[in-house]
Amino acid sequence: MAKLPKNPVENWEIPAVEALRATPDTRVADIQTKGTPGFVGDKALGERLLEERGARLSALQELLYANGRSGDTRSVLLVLQGMDTAGKGGMLRHVIGHVDPQGVDHASFGVPTAEEKRHDYLWRIRKALPRKGQLGVFDRSHYEDVLVVRVHNLVPPDVWEPRYEEINTFERELVESGTTIVKVAMFVSLDEQKARLAERLERPDKYWKFNPGDITERGFWPEYQKAYQAMLDRTSTEHAPWHVVPCDRKWYSRLAVTELLIDALENLDLDWPPADFDIEVEKARLAES
Ligand code: AMP
Ligand code: MG
Image (spheres, rainbow, N blue to C red):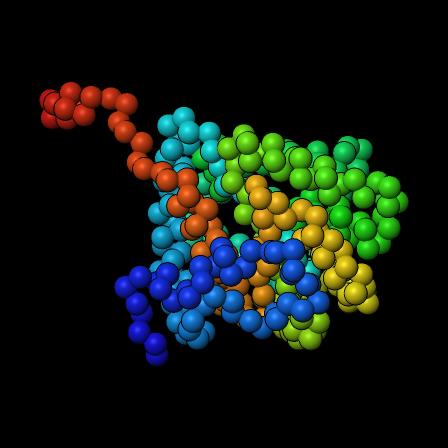
């Protein structure tokens, strides 16, 4: 087994945030979904680092929460977007699972309900934004409205086309109001998806995850690739860049997203909020009580 280094970040020859950031040259069709960009190490090391870095993530999230309780209005929002079986659920369990649930504002977005359909597509998104001091997690997001909606012509092009710019504006306002957005596009190969769907059909503990529609969607793979390409090309902005995460190796994708969140939280430069009471007075009162 590889030795656990003192500073796990040394196992990244390029920090995750740099190795994964989408660029104008990113081609969805060329993504090496088995790749481990930036990371030097094997699965055993990756899994051990996930525990260690998960503890760091947890400590940083507690700082965010503590500051939120003391008046800081900032928050962090993780946006997970990916095809079925990419591992969005696993991110929740194995990455977000490291932090105190009371500091997490989680939302997942499926086919819009009757009520949601009566509103603008951003309505349900705005309602689910993280409160101050919270770590928000979106399992799917407003990007479905330029992905599945575009692929299946659920609305005409003149309706989905302007959404890219609307989303950029929406996210800019969100960032300006103090929310750091960490956008993660998760990619599995068509073969890996097939293997994961096969597992859902083999194992009774996985039947619940299986949806016959997921097989239908495989027939639209090229259209989805095109829609994901447009999403990266048009909504990877300075204020809210996309990160392209290869997901065929779950240990890698989970570690990578942990690093992205750690980076976002470290950039907030948080410290423990100072006491808003006189410590000595309170110690004396406690002693006398
Ligand atoms: P799951 O994440 O497996 O529970 O599946 C949720 C399903 O809801 C996926 O098939 C999504 O494509 C679909 N979905 C999410 N948002 C939308 C939307 N705005 N319009 C249509 N379908 C959506
Ligand atoms: Mg599903």
